[in-house]
Image 1 (cartoon, rainbow, N blue to C red):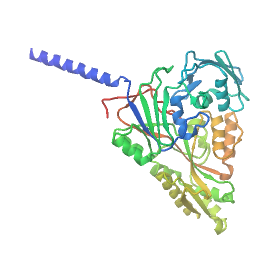
Image 2: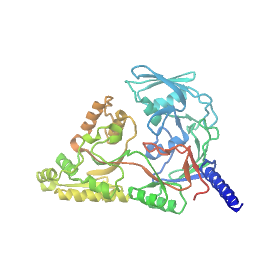
Image 3: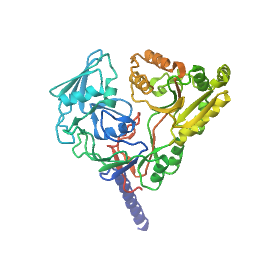
Image 4: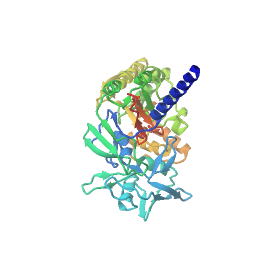
Length: 455
């Protein structure tokens, strides 16, 4: 009899543990997700997103389509779409019954057409009944990717404030300091699990790490050196694809002799910087577009060529062998990379002064986001960030590759690395349908929930 009792007790204990584990694994509603970021946001307006604002925008605003974790377009505010064989004329049927946060109903009216026209200059957008028609100036097979990135749908109040249809409402915004978002109870995609999201801005990397460690933050930005430390301390790490280009960008006409640029580019030991300072995060870059996006990045050389660098430097007059490289004074990693580049340049016979945030420098160490999953659009976007405002768009892959090669000629930009956006996550954060970070770094927090049993 006693062994039978023991077996019964063991079965009951196992069932209790299973039920407890199941309860912990099921999504729960409620709670506030505490997020910290270094950047600051003054306003949340789809016409002026900025790099930091682009992270927060999907919380409040929806697009006609959404891009899933594999980079594929899915229905959002548009439930279906069609196009002509040339991909120039598109028609989107809107989802019925969707309401803006102010209670107004989403319809294919002039306001929606105006919002898309502002996001897609040169395109013609017309509204009729429950559908939108978009006419492109050229064949645009990547239009869905662009709509999932830029095509935020909004209306404006009498005061000019934009309102969206997204999973969260903007409840409060303290300029450059703090933003609070609350759950949209009537969201067409289902109420978010979280009650609210609180975003603290202007937090240094060190402050963010400390707050994550002591339990004051749930989602923080990580420097490459902190990724391994976070994993070692039971902190999950969420990462985007390597979508941030770290590059040296020379200012117009500085230095005048392009041999200085070429010598510097050939002197840099990217592998050493990647292994030591970046802790092997991301990928070494020879091109502007990452390999995972374009498929041809490997065609651009990235290995150092010190003999050629010395030859170029030796051919310069002594006064022409000096340059200055500015870096973000508030970023310790940028300073370390700039100083290492300076050491590499010295080996080639150049003198490169690494200076903090000096606008009078010859070049700067820049972080340039790759903003589109369509290489044909991502390259003109990068060109615009480099100062080429009307860089022509190419659609055929071989033409995009050639256009990228042209951008690299002259050495005005020297690609170094493609880096992911890394985030440290507290143990209590769960995701119903991962990933919570898109390939291009966008936040997908509507499926995030908090496990109260984990702290």
